[in-house]
Length: 203
Image 1 (tube, one colour):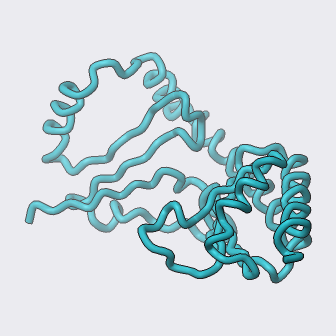
Image 2 (cartoon, helix red, strand yellow):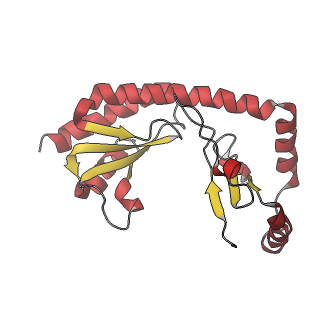
C-alpha cells in the first residue's frame, strides 16, 4: 500500500546499561521514514535535523522542502557534514553519552536517598528525561507541587499535561537532568524533597 511509518528517533543516541535497539528503519526499509535531529547532541539552536527516506520519496520531499522553506543555513549543514566525515561528531556523541550517564546516575542516587520507596521512577534506560511517580500524591496535586518546586528553582513538569485523560491516580512528573552540572543535581533534589516534606507529605 501507500502507508509509511514515521520513526522519530530524536534522542536515540542516549541509552544506558542496555544494548541499543535497532531502529525500525533497519527492518522496514522502503516503508519507514526515519527522522532525527542533532538538537540533543550538539545544540537546539542549530535547528538541524535529517530524514532517511525510501528512494521513491526523496524527490517529492526535496520539492516540498523547497516550497516550504528556502532559508536553511548551508554553513551549519556543511560544518555538521565535516564533523561526521572526520569522525568528530561520533566522538562528541560518545563524550555526551558518558556525561549524561554520569548525570543520570547522580540523579537516580539522589532521588533514591531523598525519597526512597515514596517514588517510582520509569524510563531510566534511555533518553534524557525520566518520569517520576509520587506514591503519596494524587494527580490533582501535580500543578501545585510543580508550582511550589518552581518557587525553589526546581523545574518539574506534570505528566497529566501529556494525556487527554488521566491514566494513573498518582501524581507524576517529567524530570530532565541532561542540562544540569552534576553538582547542581543533588542540590535540586534536596530542595525538592524539602518542598515535599514541608508542604505535601506532612498533610
